[in-house]
Image (cartoon, rainbow, N blue to C red; front, side, top):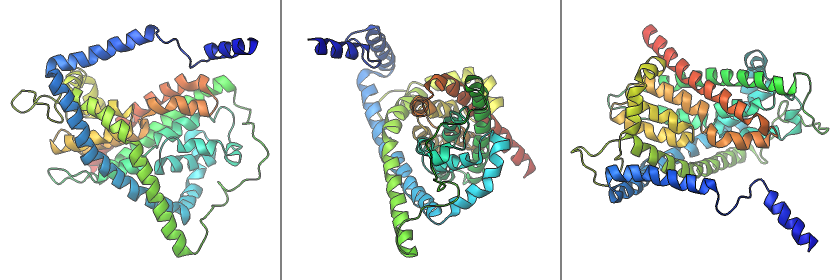
Length: 399
């Protein structure tokens, strides 16, 4: 009897255990009904449901598989660069810049490269390695979340932006590269603010506690696949492509769910002003918000259209969903080179941080700093977009 009581007590006190019916049940259900009730009253319930499903289907066929194709190619290139030492050379070149620029040890550049070639959580694998963590002081470790997130999905986002077709034949290569510069600026701002907070919390003297480790693989050596050069080439290419497939699959929920809802909040009815249930119809809510904030957004980001605000808002939850909005905006002349530069910077720097920061900070065993990390990265993402806009304007004036 005592054992049963103890087990029951442990269950009830578990932080993730809630009563079957609680206040949040009614709050959630009320907000759910209010949101879809508002959409349904404007579009019609049947049209709203049809538009939601048709939009998700079109995004899956036209956007997700395109992102997956890019992810496969980018994954293969990333694996080849890692296998044959290109990444190691970049690491050696950039390591001396990390301390003066970011206030982090040179080893942290490996985290930038890892997340740029894959996604935000790649930094956590490195942080668990004692040979990597021993270079960090205690207050520097939480900033890995910020620097890793700032470059998450960087290669895929950049490649995607470069490949967007423009109705007037404009190339977005320069815009995408400027966006990368903006993301660098945003990452520096985010990390420096985070270090300010973490230094107050942990002090600046203590190093991370690690077990004894002679591992120098991450900084002095690189681990290669078994076999000859040809075999390693093929294996790396195919395994990298496979990781691209997995990443392409991982973005499906974010793109279909978040992007579908955001598009319904962004777009208007069909051309004749009626709702038919077709894909990409909506209630034009976000453009209305954008128009109200245009006096702030235009000088800061230089958006061509008020609809541009939908991209960074979506990037808060998922970068894959955010970039899925852009081709349609470009094809309708609602976004140009400057917009693509800003979108690249903010999609890279934010890259769904609201959905990953909590778990990442918990994995680094510093959940008490989560709110500080989110605040720092919010400011960093805004600085990324602003800097990308003005860098693009400056380069346009020069050449």
